[in-house]
Image 1 (cartoon, rainbow, N blue to C red):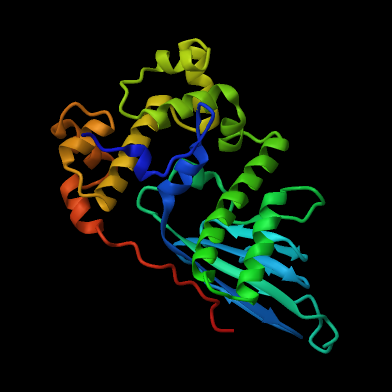
Image 2 (tube, rainbow, N blue to C red; image 1 turned 135 degrees about the vertical axis):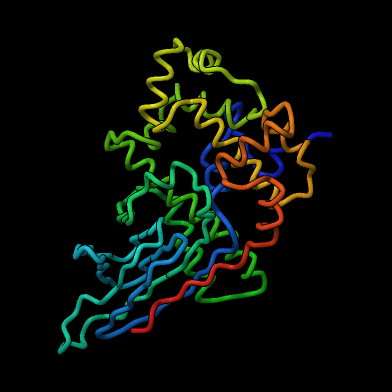
Length: 315
């Protein structure tokens, strides 16, 4: 039997639609997430060095300031969430003065996700170095619920907390990205936030993610979106940033790369599951994109998913 691509990607469905965002997150997540609680009082400064992953900070109580190398500063208040999708260098510090110890304590939840940087999803490239999600009454309630649960588990660990934290950290990443996409869409931004919110392009993306092995044509994808071939191609390229079949090739070979790393499925079966009629055609396409043969890629990457380790720099 052929490989069940949906099982590998833990795909979920809402009615007839494929959850593209879940597929996207699965394609660039690697290893296990890491989180710890930082309780600071008085005057303090915590530098975070750049690293190959995505970091996050949540202000559980108090307030602080986020500093970036370009000199910009952001004030973070209780409940604020910050995501650094590219692991950019930054620092956190208190808002008090060196001669004042009256500022209340600040509690932070700091953590990180390990990302597969070898062939990142195009969505990742569109994310800014810093995503700051401010507290607003009634805005992103699921995100704030996850934050509250994470804070509780870290403050009062009990039986099952290890599993609970792992699950909550996975949910947190989904909610952070979902909140950013929603905010960008509300601001009328273009790119992936608009693509996923656009029913026309979302329908085409869902079709490709649902059945990557199908011999899709631009005309057929346009029909899925109820547009002419030319109109669909222009709209897709404008929002996604690359032509439909270029994205389809990327998605097929992203699936193939994960199957090579995480399963013992034969190369022939993987080739068929992602739409290639022969192992030879699959190997050529894979090498063009990944720079190495499927067999060598499997030997190099099998078992390379290590737990994320990310801590503040000394300071």
